[in-house]
Amino acid sequence: MTACSALRRVYRDWLREGHPGLFFVHLDSTFEVLIDRMRRRTHFMPPSLLQSQLDTLEPLEPDEAGVVVDDTPPADVVIATSLAAVRAG
Image (cartoon, rainbow, N blue to C red):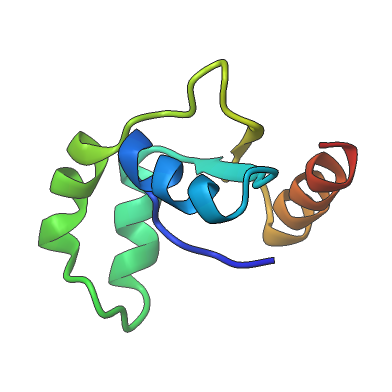
């Protein structure tokens, strides 16, 4: 398993060129939750760039192998939900 921010469809397409069976887990959250998390920890990306990242985000399309997971529950729930989706995918 690998994590990356393949925000745009073209980036995910490039990744799939080398790995056609790639399955994506899109962790979905609100701006408010994300900005709060960023402000409470040291992060390489300043909070001021969050909105531009969200503006760039192209959600998974129906023909892309993957799942959207709500990222607002506790971390253990998000992890369990994500792993279950990967195993089922």
